[in-house]
Image (tube, rainbow, N blue to C red; front, side, top):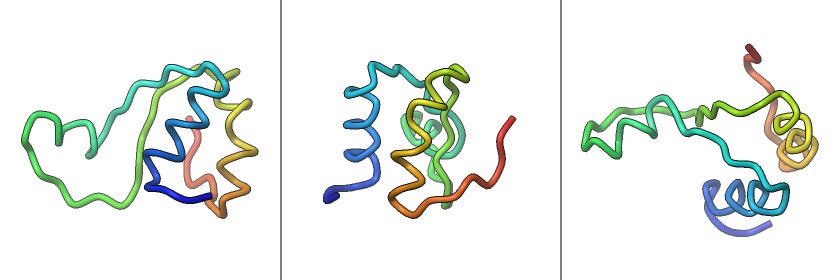
Length: 67
């Protein structure tokens, strides 16, 4: 799959009718606060997470932490 990580995730979200909330380092960039971060954090329902997880893992990503 081609495109940036955010383009790929956006496609997964749209195709699965998921509306996540972006939190963490990438979220604060919208407030013009630069942070060096290597992960992307979202809040979503457990059901939405389960519907997306197989697609994201198929790209080679791994679950680092699940709360």
